[in-house]
Amino acid sequence: MPSTVVPCLRYHDTPAMLAWLCTNFGFTIRRCIPGRQGEVAHAELTLGDGMVMIGTHSEDDYGRLLATPAQAGGLLTQTIWLHVDDADAVHARVLGSGAVITQPIGDAPQGGRAFACRDPEGHLWQVGTYDPWGAA
Image (cartoon, rainbow, N blue to C red):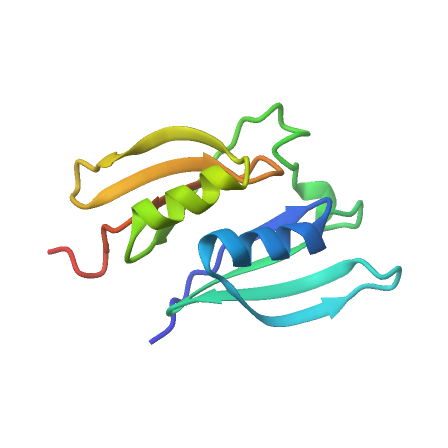
């Protein structure tokens, strides 16, 4: 069954981030809805049974409730855990993309291999082989 919790992120250059997330993390674009001025109003990206929704940051009613990492001085109140089969391979792709690694690849305390990075617009992602659904 797909996850009932779906993170939502806003980006300034959403088309570039769609490509980055698909290339580096392995997401697939499920749906992409253009906005009135050609921006990405809403996109749904899937990976396994998970999903993340993204859109272009704007100064609409919803957008005024959010700050991008750049607007927040790089500080965040959440991060996204991305379960993958091979964290070392994803780490190599992310390194090659020039993303900032905030936690080097290594063995994670909860098990498996993991690392953390910021995507090109500063959102923080933790990536690892630990599967919280499989843990007891």
